[in-house]
Image (tube, rainbow, N blue to C red):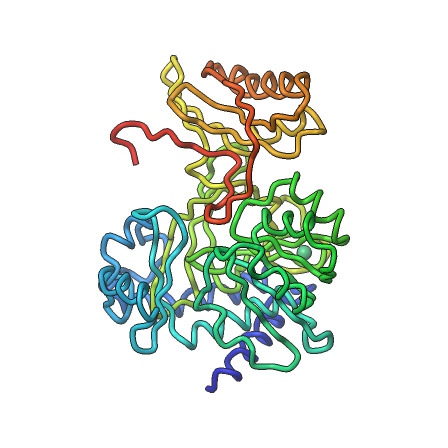
Length: 423
Ligand SMILES: [Zn+2]
């Protein structure tokens, strides 16, 4: 199959598989068939699963550390982590395979290996989910991310779809004029970037916007939607794959056509997903624990998609604060609860940080110009989040301008405390 045909085929297949009105039970039967053949055919092709039974529930749960500890055992090319990093830092390729890496602090980064055929399938899938009408309404899609990804290569193959990548790391001044001249109809960018564009650019008039790569907070959504009108969508993707995309109704649907999801309960309707990549054949990922917290939706979506809806990607699992209470209980305070307490305390709060700096020391950062009364109410509200759970960490208020940081992912709630001996 040629590349172009593969993109078109994945595009059509995704639209058909996830078509509105398809009963959930029929979708699940189709998915079970895909999963079965993937387990029988693709799973045992890599060393880690050579002798594994072709039953998902019999496989171990793995995570980034498992994969990076023996990268060669998870890909068909037996590419080791050293070879992978070397390729990533030079050509980004080993033969026909593209090598990429997640952003993040060194030591915490993960490699991925993907073939050209997988890239084309990925592209067809994301187009079907994000811009399904590009054949009738031609699109200029601007993707603004901290690093170019092998995934976007080969997208400029059609007159109906132009795709331009803007490197966030180069700073706005460098590419904002080019972005405005490109006049994108769709923009994909981290929420802090969309917010910055909303506040800084008067020329952009996109039809659709997708936030991705970071947690979307309500404070940013409000600013972005007020400036650009219409609904802000989300694309939930990571190094490990494409996991969810918003539908035309603005609700996030899991990409169950490309992944099989299991869910580990964390707290109060929040789950951590285990992902099995049904379309990945070169690098195998089965029951892979994502470092994300999702709130699953309990109501179906009006768009009629058979794919499960998610109310919110709440944040990162390792930004939840874990406490040992005096009575021996372990308590997890999740980012959404802290965030909502602060934002609900005063309407004029449009930015904040909540940092756990030590075991029992939490810092609430608010802008210097915020009224004293609002700051006090927010501090009290945050304190109640903990006192209601029988916890009494010291909570300190810090006044600080929160500058836009190009080189760092925005995490408004951040756990900087690592218990000794813990990971
Ligand atoms: Zn929907």
